Image (cartoon, rainbow, N blue to C red; front, side, top):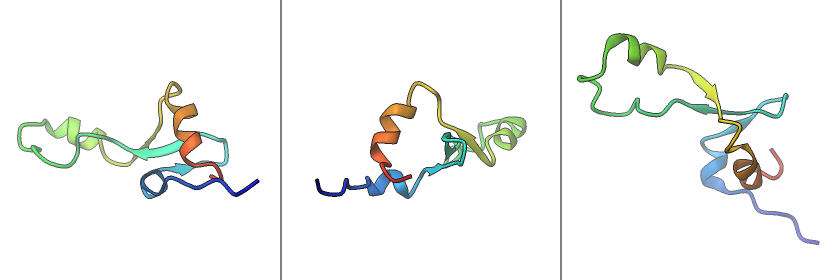
Length: 65
């Protein structure tokens, strides 16, 4: 059986943690930042884990993650 291909768009944006959770960046931090509050922008820094509903779909994109 041939090797499965990794979805490169997902591999550039997501990392699989040792626990099996998928690490990603927060959304809504790219543009239109002047209308967002200071607290909201501060809380959008850093990384978060993908929602449990989406893990199965994204794990299919990262077969060797």
